[in-house]
Image (cartoon, rainbow, N blue to C red; front, side):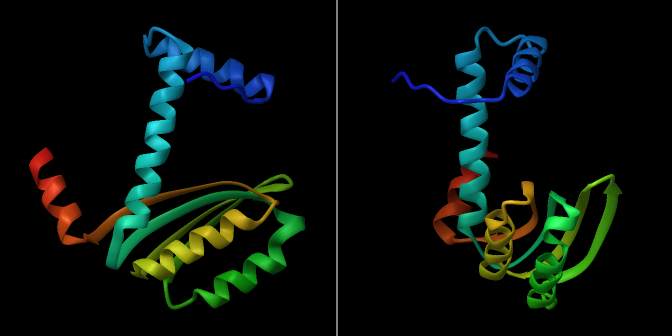
Length: 142
């Protein structure tokens, strides 16, 4: 299937340098792999159940969002263990260490992604219970 997309030139240049440095044979293959990683990451978050531990890393425009961000962090204070915040001029980088019900962690992630002033949200599940069908599938891959 062919498709087209709009990508900022600087991002495309960096993407091309990355896949070429890794020795991949084409931009198409690199895009397929990037899409697959995105899908797998999303599915892992969606399939998590029970209690999870996770880190959520995101960047944002400080002045545009700080009050709203504080409101969200207060709303999820039961799930947020601690945060690490770094200023980079007008932009900030934040890491949120979470522990709690998978549904609440998902909700936190999606709330952060809803803000226009948030550039990117990356989640790493560190500990997660998996549903029985997902668990048996992952066991067969080990």
